[in-house]
Amino acid sequence: MALNVSALNDFNNEVAGELVVKAVYGGSTMEYITIQEGVKHQEPINLMEVDLYIQNSACSATYSGSAAFTQRNITVCPRTSQDGLCLKDLDKKYLGISALEPGSYNETFALAGAYSDLLVNQFQKANDQFLWQQVSGSASTFGGTCESDGLLEILSSGSAGSALTSGQIVGSTTASLDNMDAMIAALSTDVADRDDLTFFMSVGKFRSFVANVRAANSYYFDPNSISNRGGILEMVYPYQNIKVVGTVGINSDRIVLGPARQIVAGTDLMSDFSSFQLWYDINTDQLRHRISTKLGVNVAYPEFWVSNNA
Image 1 (tube, helix red, strand yellow):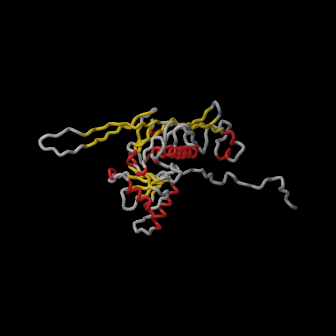
Image 2 (cartoon, helix red, strand yellow; image 1 turned 180 degrees about the vertical axis):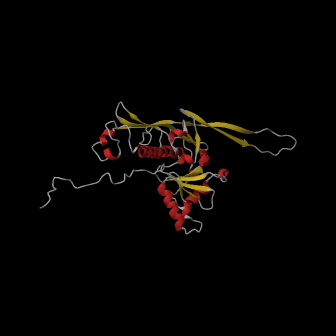
Image 3 (cartoon, one colour; image 1 turned 90 degrees about the vertical axis):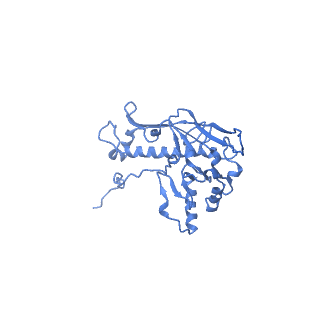
């Protein structure tokens, strides 16, 4: 006797497979720069410099020189993410068995931990994109409209808040060793001995840089010297007190070089970036989340930075 199974769908054990979450390359530019907390809307970066005057005096001296105090403002932008998941939507799917407790009051979610991790991961990526790509007054998918520029605008030539002159721009858009050497040569000698000098570039440009070092057949190249620090790729530049960093925040051919700690990011509270609210709302029968932060950035002394022309 033949079996008639035409009324049955082919078996697919959906609860047997592992759930693979879509984690993204986060980025952590804020690990390298200075953080200024307690900024509700706008606060200054207070700056001081001395213009020393040296003279050839015999029996008397003329008092001359100056100590100048200036400010560069950081304007922070409120950044909020909030959403609600109706867990009852899972009842008709395989997740109703694997992710929900028995019963009709779906107040717990077995995937809450993975969901929380992804929220933090995505927000971290959006923060790096905001720090670098934000254009004042322009809407963006990573932060909405904000009256604050990101680092690519601040460290550019010919734009509002221009920081770079033609003498601080190198002609090539590549991450070749010759181009990067030219940027180092164009860097002000006043910061040549700093231990926080950093090339910032896109992840793609960082890979090109590593390939160029390898192709040069340099005996000092060690693949183990490349580190992944929470979504940041880092390597020490050969023979220099300079780091090379690939960040998801840069999505163009731009490469910038300067003292990383002179970049100042303003925020209300640093812990806001890693803590958020996740709760079950009985009124809407939803699992809700809310992440709320403030973020802005500026550069203390932009004259100490060099860029390519991208």
